[in-house]
Length: 203
Image 1 (cartoon, rainbow, N blue to C red):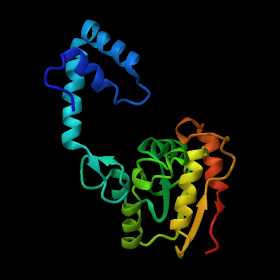
Image 2 (image 1 turned 45 degrees about the horizontal axis):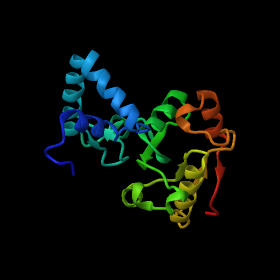
Image 3 (image 1 turned 90 degrees about the horizontal axis):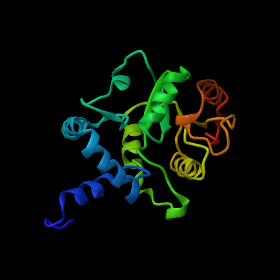
């Protein structure tokens, strides 16, 4: 917790450091730029952030961000509720939707497992996933994690969790580039990886 005596500029730079890939120098440059050139934009940023913190919550079914109890995709009755795709983050849902290769539903883990951090499972919503599967009939689970060390570790954890799942458990095909993240893969490659997904359990 910062001291009340910390000056305003230092508080601002420290606050900006919570953003991904923003270190002390980058935070300092951003603070200078906001104060010198974009004060109106900074005020809009503060207002938008405050509003988002009040209004944006997690969808009760898929765990993505939304402003109501349920997101638009989960509320869409035309989606195939028997197929559930598990992804890391909301941006991965957007990538899949842009590729038009999955008409089922999603579950968003909101994180991934890192082997470098001792396989800490607290960063992914496994309890919510278990509750989701207990309360809704699903015939196929598609593990759509990234093909990185973290994505592979997350896929392994999910495969162990789902080993007794009575339906089919599949993962995206290795058409995905090694080290690839869904967010940056082109729609054609992403669609092919979904269509050629492979079974990873014996059920």
